[in-house]
Length: 254
Ligand SMILES: [Zn+2]
Image 1 (cartoon, rainbow, N blue to C red):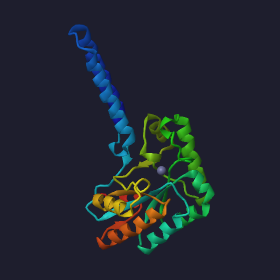
Image 2 (image 1 turned 30 degrees about the vertical axis):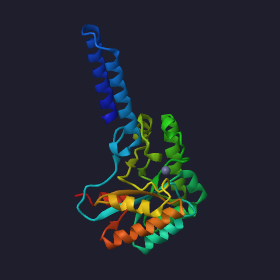
Image 3 (image 1 turned 120 degrees about the vertical axis):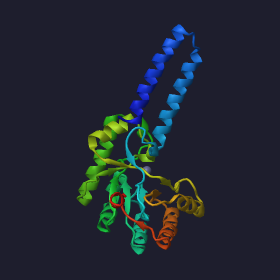
Image 4 (image 1 turned 90 degrees about the vertical axis):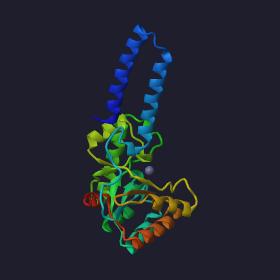
């Protein structure tokens, strides 16, 4: 049972108790409104923060005492992916790329290169629609399956891992993933590299949050992120951290 389903049950019980109080004890309607608002805010919070595992179980970190992290890149492949791959190679790091299906169709050679270099490729939907949170289950499922097909067509590898665009989850996305059977990967270090413009701020934000077992979210879609990545790789190197794929990180669980 998901936390969301549990929330439904708790709200249902609350409603029953309220109806009893309203009929027998003269409770004010405002009690019910406050209860409803609290429930609604809880659902919103659970939908926008993947770490809450509210609608579905997502891996957002791994419990380990080893100095190992997983760097993940969303929204590629793009014209910056090659630079990212070169840096990862230079610092002997492995990473995970959550690719957008339509970008894979445009840059199949980059997808192949990601896999050739020993990194992991995950599914990040076909069109990365801003409306994903409002899409029907069958639309979400089709977005995931079309991306799997594109990745498999060009690389021969079917992705086992999925990351929802914007980290948004809801019951429809949960139902779609129940059918496609992907494991969901979130993060516990969000760089905000697409929102913050100052590279030092992004870098400091990341290293402040790094712990053994962290999953770090970056995007292979801008020069800014490439520069932050190099600083991050230097930091990891000098602090004896290893960077592995998400799959590699799972093997480090203690
Ligand atoms: Zn994304």
